Every structure is written in C-alpha cells, then in structure tokens.
Length: 119
Ligand SMILES: Cc1cc2nc3c(=O)[nH]c(=O)nc-3n(C[C@H](O)[C@H](O)[C@H](O)COP(=O)(O)OP(=O)(O)OC[C@H]3O[C@@H](n4cnc5c(N)ncnc54)[C@H](O)[C@@H]3O)c2cc1C
Image (tube, rainbow, N blue to C red):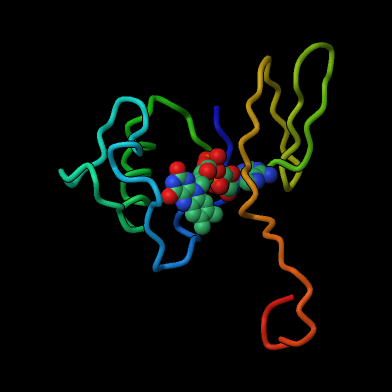
C-alpha cells in the first residue's frame, strides 16, 4: 500500500512553478514500462505534461494508493513497522519505503531586505 499526503498520486510536480520544463529530455525521462508521449526524444516537456504523464502512470499501476493520508511517525513493533497517520490512524507493514522528497519543506534563506517575500 502507498500512502500519500496530498489528494492526488502524482508527487510534487503539480506544485512546481508553472514555467517549469523537465531539464532532462524525454529520452531520459520515462518511468519503467511507459514511454513519454510526444514523439521527439530531444524535447523538454512542460510541467503540465509531466503531471499528466505521472497521473496516467499512477492510474495504470497495480497499486493501492491512499491519498489524503499524511505519515507523521514510523516506529518498530515486534519486528514490523508501525506507521502513524495524521488524525490518528495506524498501519502495520513488514517493509517500508519512505519517499517524501524535500519539496514540502523548501529552504527559504533569510532576506531582511525583501520583507515582501515569504519567510
Ligand atoms: C523545481 C524542480 C525541478 C525538477 N526538475 C527535474 C527534471 O527536470 N528532471 C528530473 O529527473 N527531476 C527533476 N526534479 C527532481 C524531481 O522532481 C524529483 O526528484 C522527483 O519529483 C522526486 O520524486 P519523488 O516521488 O521522490 O518525490 P515527490 O515528487 O516530491 O513526491 C513526494 C510525495 O510524497 C508526499 N509526501 C511528503 N511527505 C509525506 C508524508 N509525511 N506522508 C505522506 N506523503 C508525503 C508528497 O505529498 C509528494 O506527493 C526537479 C525538482 C524540482 C524541485
């Protein structure tokens, strides 16, 4: 089972800035088992194309993805992992992969000369 904090299963790409394109061309960008659409292997797809690709990929996966479930704690209990969820739910698992990446916690440097920017 996969638990995802947001309400969709396509990672951080929907929340990246809207002028973003992949820095890697499509020839190097496909995930296992699904080519990147668009033909030209040298082009750099726009963020929205990446989101569409990831959404389709997630829908094709034979995986149980539970959205709107934020993991708040992970512990061990008698050899198994115990995963705590926001709001109080718990899951038990024999194995676990944590892939939260860092986009949810951006580093914002101190900029006292720009009080108009977010802290
Ligand atoms: C601006 C930018 C441009 C990039 N451009 C490229 C590029 O051109 N080519 C390239 O290959 N890579 C690029 N990357 C890197 C690439 O986006 C990331 O490496 C990739 O998205 C990581 O995928 P991921 O699934 O590990 O993490 P993410 O896509 O960040 O997904 C992490 C998921 O974990 C969820 N999550 C976080 N915390 C919790 C929690 N506690 N409980 C449950 N769920 C949680 C989040 O909601 C999110 O959906 C770029 C990154 C950034 C920031």
